[in-house]
Length: 331
Image 1 (cartoon, rainbow, N blue to C red):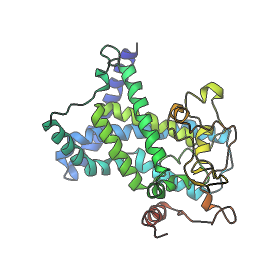
Image 2: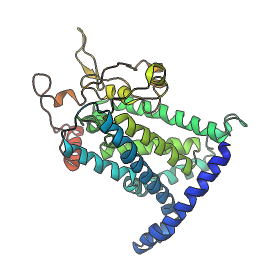
Image 3: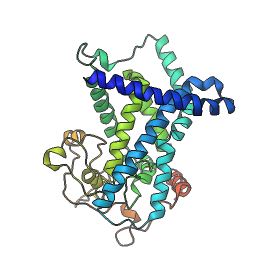
Image 4: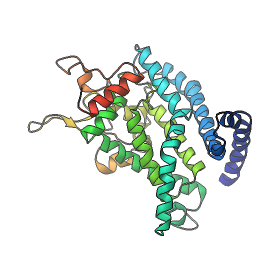
């Protein structure tokens, strides 16, 4: 049944993708003089369509849910508009297009060099023939594998000050909404894409499967960041990350700090680093299943005496520039 459903879905999506590619994308590619990249543009069309579906779900489903059960009243509409810009850049494939020209030659060169050395991909489908080769099982294993990678990538960005100087852009949103997930520093996104592309190369995930993995993860993260008073109950909270669980990660003084003790002041750290599953937080001792919906932001954004009223930027360009200044310790 799963195979039949998958085949039908692939056929239906493939027809739409082919139509958009032939009538919209391909003429643009040739008119811009990039005919040599026509084959790669087909994959880009898949990213575009998946992004449009994601945005439709966000607007038609998550938006009404936010209005039905908000955690707080949104007052800073300008900040939300900036977050929408981040979302459009990432979900509609503009960032992916830039990454293609930046990373594709590098990854192709690395793969070619490794093949000359006799290296072979560690395909998940080959781990247990007859079991991990089942599409649904292999997809879930890839999902869990990349989620574990995401956990450690995320946790490390809260550990090293240079890395936090970039990741802080994401945490500086003091009114989280469904649009807040893609609010990141572009340098951090470039680093993350390189790491994930390298792992995808190593484990042999197919490009179309990787698109689906990323799309599912992004959509769940949009739900987690939503201004939505929602949790999944005692058991559900331990199976899938909810908006309440992830909001604790963004909580002022909790999500980005290790709590102060008599011996040590508050320092970089935090809790609830998981992206899809809370299992890794539970396994590595960083889970906090509080039932409180905390205010979000970074402590030093707060006015004195709680913080020092530090600015992280009011728009896309200022947020990116201030992130670079923090990285270089210039501000």
